[in-house]
Amino acid sequence: MAVRIKNVTQRSLAGKAGVSPCDTLLKINGHAIKDVLDYRYYVTERELEITVESGGRARDIRITKREYDDIGLEFETYLMDKERFCKNKCIFCFIDQMPSGMRDSLYFKDDDSRLGFLFGNYITLTNLCDDDIDRIISMKTSPVNISVHTMNPDLRVMMMNNKNAGKSLRFIRKLTNAGISVNAQLVLCPGVNDGGELKRSLEELSKLAPSLKSIALVPVGLTKYRDGLTSLRQYTKEESRAVIETSDAIAEENLKKHKSRICYPSDEFYILAGIDMPDCESYGDFDQLENGVGMLRLLEQEFLDALKDEAPREVNRELTIATGVLAKPFIEKLKTEAEKCLGGLKVTVIAVKNRFFGESVTVAGLVTGADLIAELKAQNVSGTVVIPSAMLRHEGDLFLDGISVQGAEAALQVKLCAVKNDGYELLSMMIGG
Image (cartoon, rainbow, N blue to C red):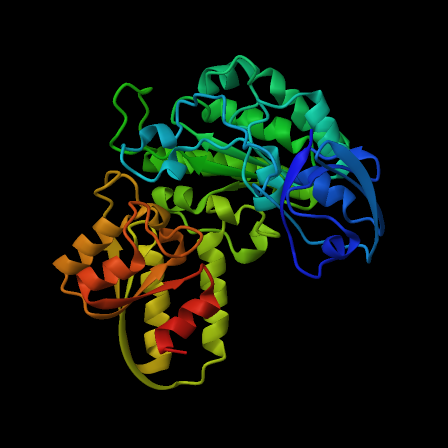
């Protein structure tokens, strides 16, 4: 498969060697280039023979460079190919629970192994074949993040509404046997893949260590837009405790065998269960932060470490922190510690109820601009308002419902400051550093 070159950076290695915009890239060192993984893998070599085509005529261009130098080619799309669409119809799919009228990009169901490697996205393996797995192994594109959900093939078929869902589980073993690191994710649904099924899944996956690095246990997220979808419900306190107990039992076995817990319930499970989260050391390398595993504990540790570096002093500053319902009690604890140390600091923490998706959705990352505006207006908030950057898209300019940061500021007559999940940055924002 050939890839069209959109642009060649001025004075780049490729430009100096004679590659032109609108050339078509065919091969690098004899290897056909079909997407970004091929390109990135083969372009790292020091001696390159690049085969391009223009006007039906192919030519070879030689470039000598340092191993990881960029040669300056830009392509029509980041992947140099179309994104792979998810072929599953999972009973818990969040995208199926979203209302109409939002940004088109929010409805795209990604299941692309290349995005998984480049950005840490999770894939299901159901649209891959043995050749795809062999390419991952040969290129050592590790780690691979996999949405497993259950190791019971028949149950996986049911949960994902895909006849290939059970058969594709064999790819996990093929990857780990080849030394490819794997992080797994189980979205748990009460009465479906927890209980005995959860125990089975954790035991089977744990056998694949040490290449199997971690398993995140995440409770199903349910919005108010579930008409016509599978009947599911939220976890109770007792059920959340049962999930943690099952995970802890197997984690203890893993600690003895592999010196790692491997399986980790998300922060949400601990909050639902009313159980303190483990200390930071229990989370190892925090491989599952994007799944909300250890995120609050790490934030707390960083915040308290940063506070130790601040000698008691007067700061005389007032601000508001707006977050999700789930995180509010945790943020309250941090602000109390800061106010003890820093005189004149007054922080108000507000939990934004999620009216857009439904109040059962409590995470900060799904708070919309409209809900933020409504909550802060109701409480007559003024001045500076700190929000988690997770409320905004990657570019940091829009909320989920398309409201811009500037639009929200204008509606509220406040200054919004987005902060990453970083304790040092949070404290700095509090004291105006």
